[in-house]
Each structure stands twice: as structure tokens, then as C-alpha cells.
Amino acid sequence: MLSYRPGSTFAHRLDPRSKLLVQFGLAIAAVAHPTPLWLVGTTAFALGTLAAARLSPLAVLRSYRVVLAVLALAPLIAGIALGPPWFRVEPALRSALYVGRILPVLFVSAAYLTSTPVRDTRAAVQRLIPGKPGQILGVGMALVVRLFPLVLADVREVRDAIHARGGETRPLWERARLLAVRSLERTLDRSDRLSVALRARCFAWNPTLPPLSFERRDYPVLAVGVALALSPLIPV
Image 1 (tube, rainbow, N blue to C red):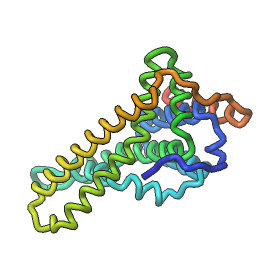
Image 2: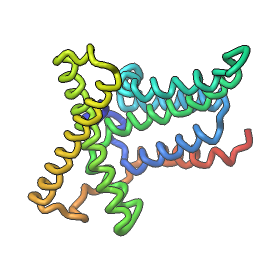
Image 3: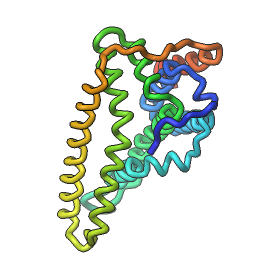
């Protein structure tokens, strides 16, 4: 699972606000221009962000394999016809082009997650969105980033436990029911423990967050993010 990894790469040294702007801009550019040329360009840019964070594209694809498997169903479903020729290529290709726009966004988000501490993300959000809304959003993002890998680990443990007890012989619907119920129970137990831990540590809505400052290397990245965000205004 993708999570923060300490390092000294170019991506690690950037201010989180500049990285957030690049993510925002790339998402706009990828969605606003559903053409093969823009898909190639945004994918190449996303591969560059992985290189800046020293991440392997294959490792990222493995981490997102479940998401990609679900997305891969879209072109197949779009191409299915209820009569001859039973499968239409043009709608499938068009759907594949739309689905392909998500891949560069996933790449950039992977580079961000592995190169940005959770506290820095919360600090960036609360500085970009002032007041109570920023505090709530910052806390929410911090909790999601910290807890989501743990929830996925719980699901894998439940799945392995079902298999260890001969679950492969049970019907698929029963295995899915056991996996969903046991995973939900673990998630609720973990949320209860989190609530107790927050109270025990005197959780504060506005703690002392790490200082953030733009360096010289951040300004070109900010310019790239702004250019990507404004790319829908460019006639193509």
C-alpha cells in the first residue's frame, strides 16, 4: 500500500502546497481534454512525477491493481451489444480513452502520498482553507491517509483467515458476506480505539503544525500547476 516513505528526492523537498496544486491541475487537464494526444501528454507528465519521487510505475500499478481491474471492466461493458455484432469496438475504445484519463491522476497521487508526511498535508490544507472548514478538512484527510492502509490490511487478514479455514469450498456469496461483515466489525473496533486514543492524547483542532515555506524550486512547480489548471482555456 502506498504511504509516506522518508527520503531526499526532489518530490520530498517540495512544499506540499505546490504538489497539491500540480495534482489539482493535472486532474483538470486530464478530464478537460479527452483526446489521445492529451492522454499521452498527461501520462508522460505523471511518469515524470514518479521519477521525481523515485517510484517504479510497475509498483504503483500493483498497488492500484484492484482499482485498475474495476476500471478495466468499463470498456468491456461499454462495448457489449444486445444484438449482432454483440460487441462494438467504437464505444469500447471511447470508454477506454475516458478511463485512461484516470491513470495519470493515480500516478501523481502516488508520488504525493509517498513523498509527503501526513502532518505536512494537514498543514497545507489548513493554510489553503482558513478557519474551521480547513481544520475539519485537514483532520479528515490526515485520518483517511493514516487509517485507509490499516483498513485494507484488516480486509486482507480477514480474507486470509477465511482461506485458512477452508473458505474456498464455500459459495462465493457466503465468502463475500463473511468478508464484508468481519471487515466492517474490525473497522468499527478500530474507529472506537481511535476515538479513545484521540481523547487520551488531548486531541486539538488547531495544533502546532509544521512550518511551510516556498523555496526557489517550488515556483516552477507552481507555474506548471497553474498552467495545467488553466489548460481547458487552450483551444485544441
